[in-house]
Amino acid sequence: MRVLVSGGAGYIGSHTVVQLIAAGHEVVVVDNFGNAKPAVMGRLDTLTGTHIPMHAFDVTDKDKTEHLFATERIDAVIHFAGLKAVGESVQIPLDYYQNNLESTFSLLRAMRRHGCHTLVFSSSATVYGDQAPVPYQEDYEPLGAASPYGRTKVMIEHVLRDVAHIETDWRIGVLRYFNPVGAHVSGTIGEDPQGIPNNLMPFIAQVAVGRREKLQIFGDDYPTPDGTCQRDYIHVEDLAAGHVAALNRIVNSDDPIRTWNLGTGTGTSVLEVVKAFERASGQPIPYDVVGRRAGDLPAFWADATRANEELGWHATHTIDDMCADTWRWQSQNPQGYDDSVEE
Ligand code: UFG
Image 1: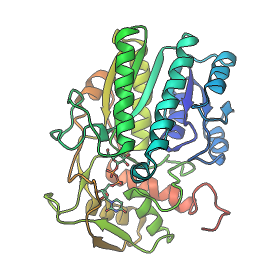
Image 2 (image 1 turned 135 degrees about the horizontal axis):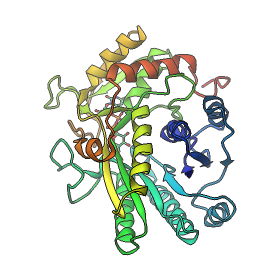
Image 3 (image 1 turned 60 degrees about the vertical axis):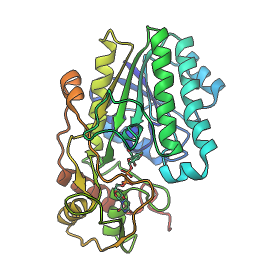
Image 4 (image 1 turned 180 degrees about the vertical axis):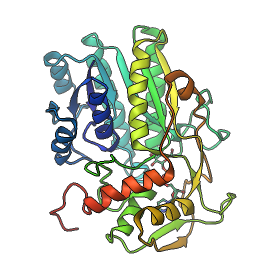
């Protein structure tokens, strides 16, 4: 298939591009480089041995999106593009609602106009809210989320369901990610957050490489075995494989829409991640335990049974693999994609 990957220069998008091409698909990338570096594209060309067509614009732009579909053959879309920082979404909610919803509307309309009805959408475990029993199962209702970011995912899931309910020629896969970490085994592509990382793994990696002095652990008084929060960390390569599997499944399915969790099914604590990273990198990770971060849940992980059974997919990488691959990326690219820039 010829697959349009929105946000294809971003962290999860770039890893998925590599696996789509390895699986025999053709890829077209659209990215506004709002949270990604143009240098990614050259590295993707090198990794895949192809030249990947690239369109640098924001898919909230309806005219440009329409023009893209009018001029490129597109069989399917994987829609990663969007704003994703939970804390920032509380500060600038209108930007989050506008960007994440309008990009989806713009793509859906252009797709429909050009007879393309195959879509894989990036959702998040955050849609389970704070009441769902652990492990999280796809059928849980009602969806809810604690942040504007999370609510954009809930809203888009509802939009997609309502559209697929009445326009039954759609084939939509909704993928709920747990905590993506890790990097391509080559160490040439990986996560490159702007500014101070919000998420645990990139923060630890920057401590290990000497960019930050120490980690702050947000609370060790949770009702968990070691008192720190547990999450379902999933290697970005497993996540990328889940997209390829979902795409192959939906085109051969009778269901207009189907949702799958992409997680490992196990929880790992903050302290366990710190220890695993020290083992993988050989570097000490100094830390202070500070107060809890607002909005953090004590512990959650996926029930990955549905993806195992229906997609023939399961996560294969351990937390040690995730740390080793993150470390290879971070140590080979201490300043991310932009090695010449001083912070
Ligand atoms: N943590 C620290 N110190 C840090 C950063 C994080 O102790 O500097 C802790 C957090 O308190 C949490 C754990 O590490 O217990 C994981 O935090 P992340 O920020 O890495 O991940 P979250 O689980 O908070 O967030 C992730 C995704 C969001 C998504 C959310 C809910 O990043 O996109 O899961 O599914 F919305």
